[in-house]
Image (cartoon, rainbow, N blue to C red; front, side, top):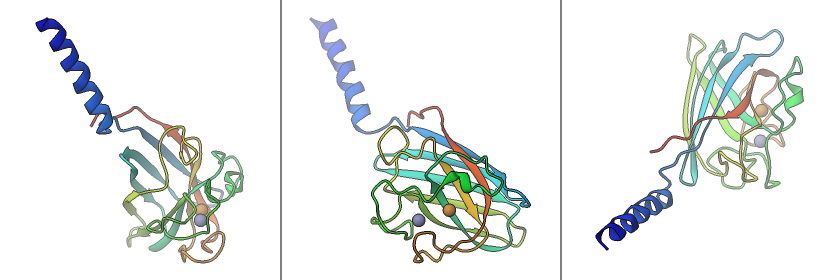
Length: 176
Ligand code: CU
Ligand code: ZN
């Protein structure tokens, strides 16, 4: 009887842990320059409950703001990355900034590059996920643009040419 209690106790613990979302799916993208660009970098996505933590480090930029989005297709093969399609938009919403719930899921706002052309981005974003749901960013692409995203102009934010592109691939789950 004692052993049965121990076994049930373990099951309860495992169930509690999964309910608390201690399993954190992750994904990564390695961004490569488009034709004529020097922009490159890495992006990591970690699902934390309903939100996704995004950490990116991008180099080779001009100082200042650069539009930063998840685009619909995980295809960076075109020289200008036009193959990645438009902004990832599973809810058919308008273009906006990352803090607006009713937006393209892929709208991550802007990178802000320093005087040496390096941008470090850290954000906690809703409306996307890492997995298999319709708002999952796995298998899509991250794009960095030449100009600032004005967070208003439809449907692109008027952020200009695509300077780097990277396919988003599923990584190992983290257990915390
Ligand atoms: Cu974009
Ligand atoms: Zn958008």
